[in-house]
Image (cartoon, rainbow, N blue to C red; front, side):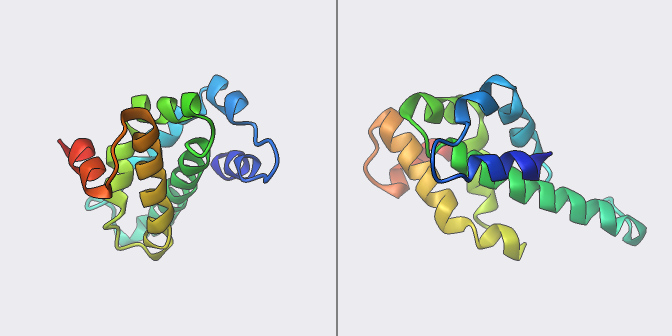
Length: 130
């Protein structure tokens, strides 16, 4: 489901951001971002780990797409608590997630810049990690 919603949000023209927000997907995506460490998983559980990492990647991408909307939609992302979790993903050892770092940085910066009037990425990171 996460991938399907992310694909809908990736449409070039009129992505259904409000519909996704109204359907309650944002808190689910934020929850997926919390799945960044699996020290207790055994080798036999590698498929679960791969699934959760893929879901985390899709959720991060979907959140990035949501925050690319109008300022009201960006505000939903800020209030959801997603930004500190996206900041944590910047240092992810997972290639799929680390490849998205430029998009995460842009999302974080633009979301906070438009909402709180920061003008440097350092100010944004400081605000998010306080």
